[in-house]
Every structure is written in structure tokens, then in C-alpha cells.
Image 1 (cartoon, rainbow, N blue to C red):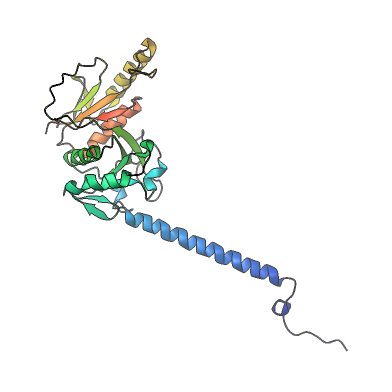
Image 2: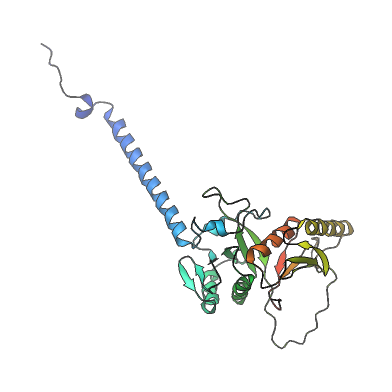
Length: 279
């Protein structure tokens, strides 16, 4: 008489049991990875003052902005500015203007020259006066580059990571210096007065809301310099430097619009003048 085994084969050790165990471990591992990724993403958002509900306040439709993976790295120096209260944030830590330079020096301590850049996450409604104070604190830390964090398109929640536009900062003026600087005929300065009117080397060229003429004019100048072999001193690169000089009473968002337009014309680099600005 045949004995019938009444127990399921998987329980007593059939050939399928090893596969069952392997699959269980795989599912468990994937679950742990998913939970870890979610937790890290949440922590990263919490460590920035510009969490999802505030990122819509960053500059948008900045076509010249480009991706920089370093913006999201914990080792980077990203300074958030929400308003004109005088408070600046690096992660969740709040700093006054007086303490900011010291913290920037600390964050930049072991960085190579090409990585010595401070990222600015500022709401568009912040006064440019506040941003100028921040830029001054950055250059006091011996940093000559800033990355203006912005979106290339209209902000959509979680749809796109912020990009940035790089600008150069001037050296601190030397106190009591009597040195006479010879004017450079190749210097291009875009000025923005408190009403938003734009001038290029004192020639009126539109306003904050109409930057097309500025882009066209700069593009023409650069093309002409390329044809005539007008190079930056000591290099074989066409001189395409443009300085931005903006009234401190403007909003940061308006100044960034002009910076974006200047960059679209092919400017490299863009320098921000932050001394002797009008109100």
C-alpha cells in the first residue's frame, strides 16, 4: 500500500524551497533600499530652508541656467535667503551677517580652487540690498564666485531640480588706495536704475521687462570682436566680460532677469559690481 504524504512539499524541503528563500531576501533588500532612499530625500529637503513649499519663490524661466550636481551635495555651501530680516541660512542653521563670513571660510576650508563657489538660494522678492550684503560677506571669505540658484522653466513641484547661473565677484576695494586705474575701452557695463531702466555703457537699451535689445546688442558686439580678433588680455579667448551694476532698491528677481539676458547673449564671465551702488 502506498503512503500518501499529506504535508505540502514546500514545508518539508522540496526543490522549490531555496528559490522561495532567495526571493524573500531579494524582496526584503529592495524594501530596505526604498525606505532608505525615501528617508534620505526627506532629510535633504528638511535641511534646506527652500523646501518644496518655498522653492516656487526662486527665480524661474532662467534659460541660461545650467545643471550643477554640487548644489545638492551636503558638502556644498548653499545660503538661503527668505526675506530682508538679515537672517541667512546654511541648511537649518541661522546666521547673522556678522557671523556669515566665518562660516563660509569653514565650509570652503578643504575645497579645490574649482569648487570654491557659494550657492545663493534667494526668493525673488528679497531686496537686492540684502543680496549685496551677502555677496560682500562671500568675497570677504576670499571667494570670487557665486552660483545663483534658479529654475530653467516655470516651477512645477518635484518636476525639476534647480540649476544655477555663475557670476564673478570683485575684489574688495583697497582702503586709502591712490592707484589710478586706466579705463579699459573693452569694458562693458550694464546698469539698472531704480526704475528698471537699462543702459549699456550709458546708452539706453530697454528695461527689465524688455531685454531683447540688450541681448541683440551684446551678441553683435561679441560677433564683431570675434571677427576682429579682440581677445581677453593674455589669452586667445574673445573678450566677452560684462559687468552688472544694479540699484540696491531693486528686487533680486529683477536683477537676475537681466543677468539671465546678458548670459544668453554669450557673456563669459558676468561680473557683479557691488561697491558704490545707487539706492
